[in-house]
Length: 411
Ligand SMILES: *Cc1c(COP(=O)(O)O)cnc(C)c1O
View 1 (cartoon, rainbow, N blue to C red):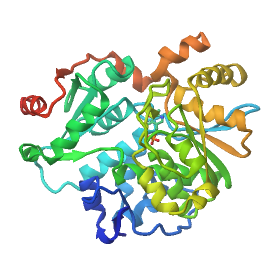
View 2 (cartoon, rainbow, N blue to C red; view 1 turned 90 degrees about the horizontal axis):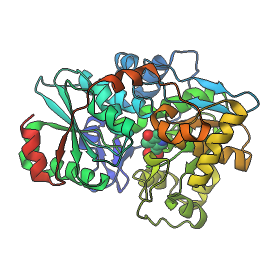
View 3 (cartoon, rainbow, N blue to C red; view 1 turned 135 degrees about the vertical axis):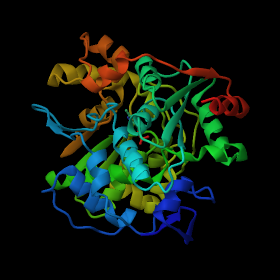
View 4 (cartoon, helix red, strand yellow; view 1 turned 120 degrees about the horizontal axis):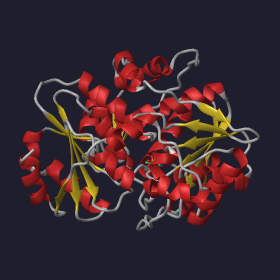
């Protein structure tokens, strides 16, 4: 299988090139040259299913990789008198990003060509950094460097980024998430950083999107013709669902549940894509005004009417997020995080038939918001407890490349 940029279908890339470049040289995003239909049944464990399903895209046996990467469960919970919920938060950092991060890490370890030290560099606004760090923790020949905006992420998220130790290094940047991302982007283009052998774990990386198609495919075979309601920010998770549908898996509709960032809702209503500055909401991992995977979705549907046939978009306010967290607890005795609440709100409000609600994170990661609403302490999963007990360590830096260079050189 070869890959092309969303902006040029003539130039072909291998999977390795696509993963290492992250972004296509013309600024577009990598997509499979074609998404072929594949016939599968779900009488396999998830790792074996994943290896079979992804093999055409990675051009290699993946059994060893998927066995190590997907070593936790993806239960579908049936709420009594309520909807089905696809729980994607049973990985080591309790968010769905563990799937892709762990696949990327095992793939990188399996395919490394030298024993030289490589540096995985990642900017994070919350969950990505922790998932990538956990995935590469103690991997020989790899280290992880995380940049996060000082004071702008939840306390538990920060604790998670800064407590791994070993080969994980966290920098608290005196600035915003955009500043962190700017530093990362410039580092990849700066000659001084060549010697660090940087690897990108960015959210647009193909190796982060493809593995996420697996849980949609697997679930759709168990519950054919369901509609997935997906809490959406940068559109990575939803793109994976769209790709699973294109592969021929029996998925009916795909609904983007967004917060008050309405770029996608406006596109759905008008056919015009107008990126906006992001606004802060309770579902902070979805605070995105310029969804970075939009170009992939747009490329796939090419015409707006085709998009409208398969996709619906809704926007949920902070107030609705709060009332939905309360209702879910009262009605179903079920604790949900603010992101997952957007999917629940869409389901309740629009009476969606045959719905599967995608739960993207464990509520214990956002206990400051959720506990106040449900008046109950949330039990912290063991994996999270372990991380929270450790000592935090980070170096605070000014938001510029030179300072970052000086500090990374000292590691
Ligand atoms: C990253 C994240 C999202 C948004 O996913 P995208 O792939 O960016 O659309 C939703 N919920 C949680 C908990 C997240 O960490």
